[in-house]
Image 1 (cartoon, helix red, strand yellow):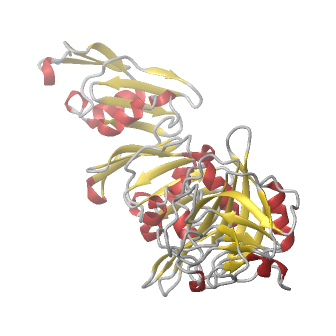
Image 2 (spheres, one colour):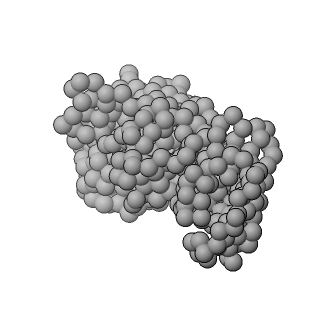
Length: 460
């Protein structure tokens, strides 16, 4: 018998092998089998789904039958069961292609009553989560596998707050959650970053920063010390001190390519780095990066050297007189070299003589080359440093700190910042072994850049 006057003014009639439901808004449509059973069990026309808006469509492997309703759909999956998809989760599911999208068919019904009043529904290749205040987003693929391994929505990360974003540096992907992010990149794997290390990582441009992608999970001990490794370095949380930042030298050239160097390098054909791990450290890693035809930078060579005996001055802080033994922090041009004889450099070269001096007194010669028979401290007798047994200035390069073309000279802000031999802590210069110094000279050109300082303040 036909029943009319139902919810929404519709009608319903049941037959031996199915049910036909009609409403003025939807027309008449047939329900059969498992789809009919599930709809009637949920309340039929009074259920959340409402009236059917089309007949069932079946196909695929396994066979999946779908029927659309006013506020969602029912799916019958052979061997799995029959499941509704509705509300906010259905809207997201349909926007992603529904049954023909990446998520595939549902594996169970929506589950609600999760912490915070949230709901979730599992699909063939992922899940969709709805959480008040967070939104409705899918989690799938490698990121979903890691998310579930970390406890899913009941784990520390909480609910997703955005969809997966791909096409990142190196073809990577990332997804944001309430208390962290999960990253995927070929060669790095899929890892989460959260808490204090996660905040620091995000502030340093995340995957676009010098660290690159995470390659391990965060590991902590009972004292609260935590550590996490990345493609190009390590972040450590030290109780009472905060984050400790460590980079490998493999980070330097990629950091140029991703814009993670804090100082301007002006597209120089060569950029050399002299980087210490910490302030007060005298040991530096020296890496030269060469600009490629496509505009990117690649490592040319590297060495170990030393900075000033007092380490690096902080960014924007003058080194002061050389006897304070600080090296400057920043990016400087290289425009001239000097020594006892040109070793084959393309830099403008000055051959030293017994009268060669570099001005340290606060007069017109300050931080400049000049010649004099007088030897008055703090002017530097370049001939003496070139010919003494340690032969510091047998070959050298002028780093244009506190001098043109990088800046006007400021009296008593620091002078005589060179790259030279005698690989020991200096009075503010950068020193290398003789062979490494010659390598630099023979490849350098006027206008090359020299970036020097502590990794924490040089790189994002």
